[in-house]
Length: 101
Image (cartoon, rainbow, N blue to C red; front, side):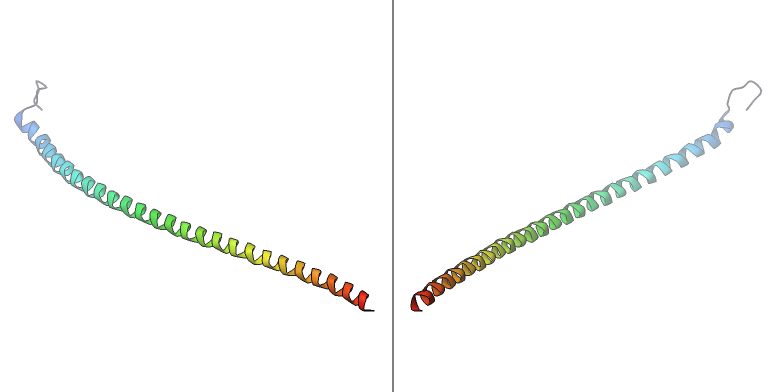
Protein backbone atom coordinates (compact mmCIF):
# COMPACT_ATOMS: atom_id res chain seq x y z
CA UNK A 1 0.00 0.00 0.00
CA UNK A 2 1.01 3.49 -0.55
CA UNK A 3 1.83 5.90 2.18
CA UNK A 4 -1.59 7.56 1.98
CA UNK A 5 -3.28 4.30 3.17
CA UNK A 6 -5.35 3.88 -0.01
CA UNK A 7 -5.19 0.62 -1.92
CA UNK A 8 -3.90 0.86 -5.45
CA UNK A 9 -4.78 -1.34 -8.42
CA UNK A 10 -1.57 -3.25 -7.92
CA UNK A 11 -2.52 -3.83 -4.27
CA UNK A 12 -5.94 -5.19 -5.30
CA UNK A 13 -4.73 -7.53 -8.07
CA UNK A 14 -3.72 -10.39 -5.70
CA UNK A 15 -7.01 -10.03 -3.85
CA UNK A 16 -8.91 -10.11 -7.13
CA UNK A 17 -7.06 -13.29 -8.09
CA UNK A 18 -7.88 -14.85 -4.72
CA UNK A 19 -11.56 -13.94 -5.14
CA UNK A 20 -11.66 -15.58 -8.58
CA UNK A 21 -10.04 -18.68 -7.13
CA UNK A 22 -12.58 -18.74 -4.28
CA UNK A 23 -15.46 -18.39 -6.76
CA UNK A 24 -14.12 -21.39 -8.63
CA UNK A 25 -13.86 -23.36 -5.40
CA UNK A 26 -17.41 -22.37 -4.45
CA UNK A 27 -18.66 -23.60 -7.84
CA UNK A 28 -16.86 -26.91 -7.31
CA UNK A 29 -18.33 -27.19 -3.80
CA UNK A 30 -21.84 -26.52 -5.15
CA UNK A 31 -21.39 -29.31 -7.69
CA UNK A 32 -20.13 -31.63 -4.98
CA UNK A 33 -23.05 -30.75 -2.71
CA UNK A 34 -25.55 -31.42 -5.51
CA UNK A 35 -23.89 -34.76 -6.19
CA UNK A 36 -24.00 -35.64 -2.49
CA UNK A 37 -27.65 -34.61 -2.29
CA UNK A 38 -28.45 -36.94 -5.18
CA UNK A 39 -26.53 -39.78 -3.52
CA UNK A 40 -28.30 -39.18 -0.21
CA UNK A 41 -31.67 -39.18 -1.98
CA UNK A 42 -30.76 -42.45 -3.70
CA UNK A 43 -29.71 -43.96 -0.36
CA UNK A 44 -32.97 -42.77 1.22
CA UNK A 45 -34.88 -44.59 -1.52
CA UNK A 46 -32.84 -47.76 -0.97
CA UNK A 47 -33.34 -47.59 2.79
CA UNK A 48 -37.08 -47.06 2.27
CA UNK A 49 -37.20 -50.05 -0.04
CA UNK A 50 -35.25 -52.19 2.43
CA UNK A 51 -37.53 -51.06 5.23
CA UNK A 52 -40.56 -52.14 3.21
CA UNK A 53 -38.92 -55.49 2.48
CA UNK A 54 -38.18 -56.05 6.16
CA UNK A 55 -41.72 -55.10 7.16
CA UNK A 56 -43.20 -57.41 4.54
CA UNK A 57 -40.97 -60.25 5.71
CA UNK A 58 -41.99 -59.55 9.30
CA UNK A 59 -45.66 -59.74 8.31
CA UNK A 60 -45.05 -63.05 6.54
CA UNK A 61 -43.25 -64.49 9.57
CA UNK A 62 -45.95 -63.28 11.97
CA UNK A 63 -48.63 -64.73 9.73
CA UNK A 64 -46.84 -68.08 9.63
CA UNK A 65 -46.38 -67.97 13.40
CA UNK A 66 -50.09 -67.28 13.88
CA UNK A 67 -50.95 -70.24 11.64
CA UNK A 68 -48.57 -72.48 13.59
CA UNK A 69 -50.11 -71.40 16.90
CA UNK A 70 -53.60 -72.09 15.64
CA UNK A 71 -52.58 -75.51 14.32
CA UNK A 72 -50.84 -76.31 17.60
CA UNK A 73 -53.92 -75.31 19.62
CA UNK A 74 -56.12 -77.48 17.40
CA UNK A 75 -53.71 -80.37 17.75
CA UNK A 76 -53.59 -80.01 21.54
CA UNK A 77 -57.38 -79.88 21.70
CA UNK A 78 -57.62 -83.11 19.69
CA UNK A 79 -55.35 -84.78 22.27
CA UNK A 80 -57.58 -83.56 25.09
CA UNK A 81 -60.64 -84.97 23.31
CA UNK A 82 -58.88 -88.29 22.72
CA UNK A 83 -57.83 -88.51 26.39
CA UNK A 84 -61.40 -87.78 27.50
CA UNK A 85 -62.73 -90.49 25.19
CA UNK A 86 -60.17 -92.97 26.53
CA UNK A 87 -61.16 -92.17 30.11
CA UNK A 88 -64.80 -92.62 29.17
CA UNK A 89 -64.04 -95.97 27.53
CA UNK A 90 -62.10 -97.05 30.62
CA UNK A 91 -65.03 -96.15 32.85
CA UNK A 92 -67.46 -98.03 30.61
CA UNK A 93 -65.21 -101.11 30.51
CA UNK A 94 -64.94 -101.19 34.28
CA UNK A 95 -68.75 -101.05 34.56
CA UNK A 96 -69.12 -103.85 32.03
CA UNK A 97 -66.54 -105.96 33.85
CA UNK A 98 -68.36 -105.40 37.17
CA UNK A 99 -71.70 -106.45 35.73
CA UNK A 100 -70.14 -109.46 33.94
CA UNK A 101 -68.61 -110.80 37.10
